[in-house]
Length: 176
Image: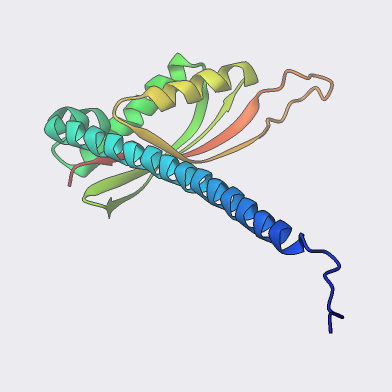
């Protein structure tokens, strides 16, 4: 009658131990994962709060921000003319030889008027960076919409110091 025998009597105990240890390891890993996710979300929330605070500071000083970023003039055409004058002065300051300054459209965009200019000129490679840097720091704000560069033509083909022919499409903004 006693024909039933256990071949591995500790199998059940080993299986239970492995199951408990595996569950504990899984819980520790899940806890670490969710802690990292929560920490990342907390950093994102802090970033958003700092952006909101910066926007509130800009809103309270709105007149200074508008004065620094927008051209101020009685009419949009006068602001466009002021922008052209500024670009001529910047070009002379950075040794850019402007051949053409074309006043393009004045169009409404998000509560302001966008004034477009196209500049065609010649500049040496060593002066291009300074000119673009001056444009980036210019107040009122100037946005470079596009830039096209190519080597200017020269009569002597062996000259490596040929200037660059540059075409810039710029935008400035004014109040309506």
